[in-house]
Length: 217
Length: 223
Image (tube, rainbow over all chains, first blue to last red; front, side, top):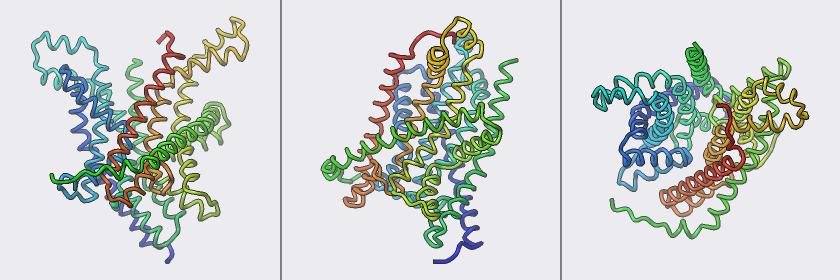
């Protein structure tokens, strides 16, 4: 046993780069896949809509931790060997896609039906109707809740610690096992998450209020 | 793919899994009941308490909502005992869940209180309704109706995030699964079965909440 020193402090603080990296990976992947999910949920074809709905129900209806375990322990079943970094990344992308897809479905449905009918009457193709008419308007409503969800993504990356990926939480566990100063260690870990998440929460709140004002006008 | 699925070890342990499922339900319900009481007190403090109390409640909410549940759990299970507060994994898990839910539910309840227009209360008083009648029919029921969807989905989110308490080896469903995993090494089979159990719990609770809504709160209103 040794005391909690300056190297321990930096070990935990620098592990934040893995938390940020994993968050970015989950967010970028989740945004791309979430768009597919949102379009699937609002598709006219029944089979596509059911498939997207099933995807959302499954990923919103089971714990993120178990999704992580299933990717991590399931990959060897398929003959793949994933390191914790990739396994956590894949599970977080799937989970983020389900939640963002569902948020964006609401934004797409908030655009009046007449818009979609008018573009159909003008003979626009599905791709043009979506990318030129519906999505640009839906995107404006989607910004605030999407930034808000980014906070959930950052917090979700802490679960990667349980399968052994050394991000901030796992770094804290390692230092705690060596120094047994849990009060310092976990206060520091919590402070790092707070510094990452709070500005995002404030930004989301600011965007939300600005949007509410825009609608009042 | 030449993997042999072996579910017999998992299904042989069904009494353990059933017990874990019950503890997950029990933890979630208890934490929700206590957490709601905390939230009502905090919502009151935030809307009509004195300034220092309002500041304190705000700090609590921001702190909890901007840090991961896993870190909060570690804090309650590892850090607090180091300053003399000793408790079991089960109690630490329950307290962490209460504290976590309390912060989220405070914001939901505050929104409910603020959703009642003042004129509505004044109108009820003008119609000579008694104070308790005003509270029950003019404040509580419409406020509950307004926050019902957010509150019930928060309960489901809490139940799902309670899987995380397995990280301190509590006795919930995921902890049972982790123990079985280390005994039988059938990780994938165990976790897929347990994931299905959580999915069924989510669907059952959602259906139950919908039923309660249709029976009690499904009346027409202005919105």
